[in-house]
Length: 78
Image 1 (cartoon, rainbow, N blue to C red):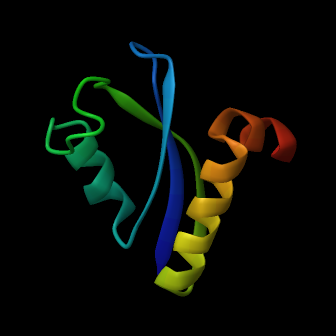
Image 2 (cartoon, rainbow, N blue to C red; image 1 turned 120 degrees about the vertical axis):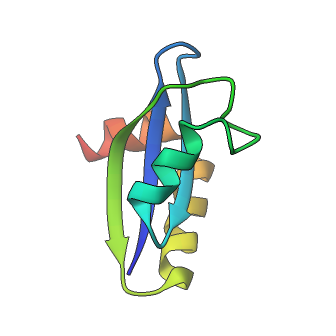
């Protein structure tokens, strides 16, 4: 199983969109300064997650969210 996720940094007021096969481990990495693109926004909070049965579907959803913008996507889904 794969997840597409949106996390949010209160300190930076920014969203990050990604995908992973292990959401808990991935969030730990984001909050442990191990991910270059998110190390300055710690702590990150999980805001939204969708589960897929293939990596391909998770990546497709990630691209869709990034194209729309995380804030707009979250607003659209209510």
